[in-house]
Length: 475
Image (tube, rainbow, N blue to C red; front, side, top):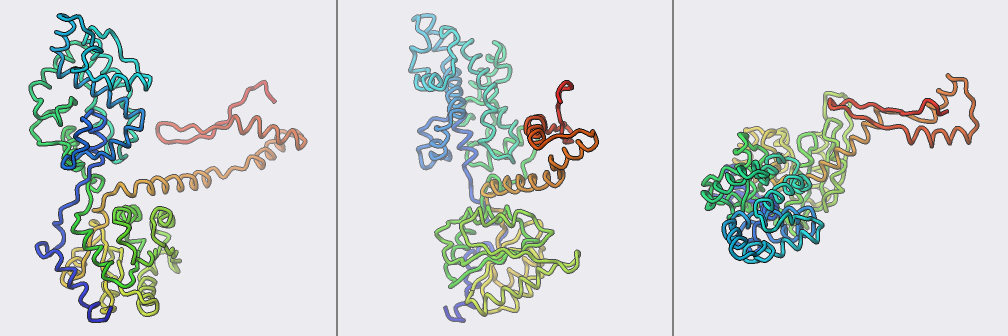
């Protein structure tokens, strides 16, 4: 690519969205994972998942259909909805025709009953009395719904979701009658007419997308959901601009200032892009700092791009050398390694000087809402340099690196806090007690007494105690 084309690239990028010159009102892309999981569990018919124009996704259905705990809740909810919708007809069939619910496939789906039986769930409490059968369904749902907690993201309040499955006073005649009356009176508002415990307001399709569902879910509980990146993604327009920037480059490198970026947001952003369109990204260079998040050193294990990790030492604890290192390496990549395009991941306005001093290079900038100043965004807009927010990407793509980072740091911190060697400890104990053991006795005592009788106890306030339980008669 010649220099004149390279100079014009950023100008062309800005023209991609002429109706939104400030780039900040781009519509978020919709996500359907949470509503698809909820729709499966609450018993939305499979045919809805199979329709392209309906929000619930068939791939989620197929995945959950393989999980016993999810299957059980779904089939219990299907039977409950069908019993609620056909209660009078079922009663008439029992009283007038002497039929049992098992013999009414037009009202009670045999397939759901069979699957529950195959999964080891016995729900048949007097199939000639609808009310005890409904009580049993409600009891099973209440007792088993928490088995599905790990199906949903940790960032969503689980109790709000679980409560949607619980019929209020669902083990009593008065409770089930009240729930049925409310359901019949407001059935047109229920998503796909399946029963659930909610205010039943005219909100349109509450399962339209994750963002709508979770926002309403919190509203019903007098709360406000704020972590929208867990339920939505950046717009396809933003992704398209990123792909175009990379495609028009000869060789592209990500430059990441770790101190001024978030590893989980960046991981999620990269994993939510079409990996086939990232072929021209040569590598991601991480400029890490001792004051940055520890998860940066793990990023390479969670993305499919080549990562070069650089830990920057500090000469003074209060002075970072990241700015200088980033600037020097970016210049080296441009002048020596034929890199013509850079995705700069940082919210630090100091890097505007670097962008200004490399007018022949192409830049795209990834920032974060709370860290990026208005001044930086303004100068990027005026210079026709495209920027986007990495914390607008769907955050679900970064959940596993968050968990791994927590576990790694816990292991490191616990080891540092305990700092305990049982051999050294036993030698000190023997010295204080004036007891002598040969090697065999010594090793046997550690193996049989110490290892088997040491345990960690965690109090409700988080205090941890290493406890050694022993019998007074043992030596």
